[in-house]
Amino acid sequence: GAVVSQHPSWVICKSGTSVKIECRSLDFQATTMFWYRQFPKQSLMLMATSNEGSKATYEQGVEKDKFLINHASLTLSTLTVTSAHPEDSSFYICSARRGQGDGSPLHFGNGTRLTVT
Amino acid sequence: GENVEQHPSTLSVQEGDSAVIKCTYSDSASNYFPWYKQELGKGPQLIIDIRSNVGEKKDQRIAVTLNKTAKHFSLHITETQPEDSAVYFCAASMGSWGKLQFGAGTQVVVTP
Image (cartoon, rainbow over all chains, first blue to last red; front, top):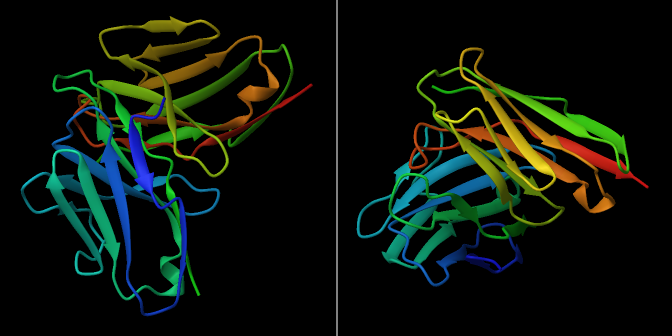
């Protein structure tokens, strides 16, 4: 079964509004979660690394003021797309590691389809 | 940084035949290579992974091989079934804690 839960699975919003996406690790604690973005028929692009209790680390080219990440607990990370525009429409996917040691695989949520009109 | 190339981009196979997807990586420091299966509208699902101290790993109909010298690794699916149809991604990182660099993906279509 799924070990990472993402909500909502899809959302439609108007241009200029903000949208929050939640990522939860189920029955395990995740000190680090990752947020990815995926355009149709393309690969996954890492946006940022979410660290519990500290600021997220953003990849080059990702606007931290536009994509706000909050990792307030060991089981929850949120991504807020602020002042969304049509070009932000995409598939957003979070992931988390189950386990502490090296060799712990990365598990992904089922993604959130964001459509900005 | 790491660069992962994946081939082919699409692969059509007859049910029961084998499918092979190949990936190459650029950073010799990478030592963890997972494979993910992504069905339409869903997140990627880990199907198998391999570490650089192992040359081959098998799990039922799925196997992965790694050639560290040549810096390439491959996914083999035997006795393919229609439910194997999906997009498959390879990835590489330095340690399973490192950031994953994904290949471009392979659309596999298994026809009955």
